[in-house]
Image 1 (tube, helix red, strand yellow):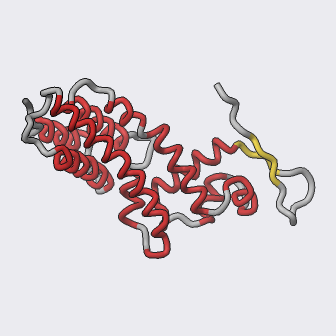
Image 2 (cartoon, rainbow, N blue to C red; image 1 turned 60 degrees about the horizontal axis):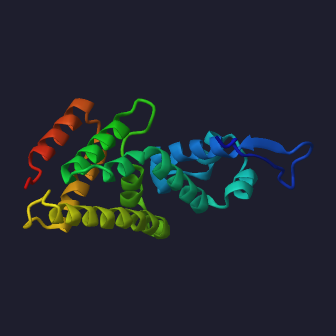
Image 3 (spheres, rainbow, N blue to C red; image 1 turned 120 degrees about the vertical axis):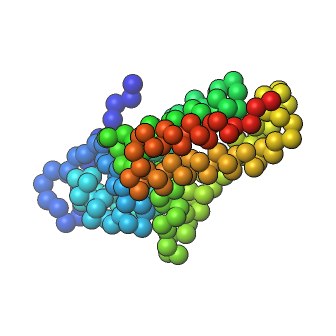
Length: 208
């Protein structure tokens, strides 16, 4: 197991020993702020307060706000979206959908995490001045969408899905359900309500 990176950073105006902090812990705090408030809704003051560091330290360790967001997004995908990788390994297309949907519900209803999907929150709330951030989130989402289309095409070839099913259309149905889970969780939907959404969606899933 890798030891957390600890950096010593001293702003030009400070005196005495450089301030030390754990990069991993600081990044985890930044992720939580971005997840709660979205990119545009997060200020540098929000970040430095949550991370327990100064602005010069933030810039020295992570670059600017956008660079920090990209690192936080990497962490989010690695830690919070691990269920998507598990989903893609399922033997059936329905299994892929079920693991993704239930994993999403687990994610957005955790008592220890903000509600909603970080990607959805950011992509729908970015203003014109933050388009590069929105484009980054959308680009990453497109990679996942292509992977789902390929997985559903394979399911058709294997006879797991009916031949007439449109793989891209089915992918978009699944994505719409995942986004719906995030939006409804953000609006206060309960775990029970989201579980019913999943059950209803899976009941409509096409079978060969």
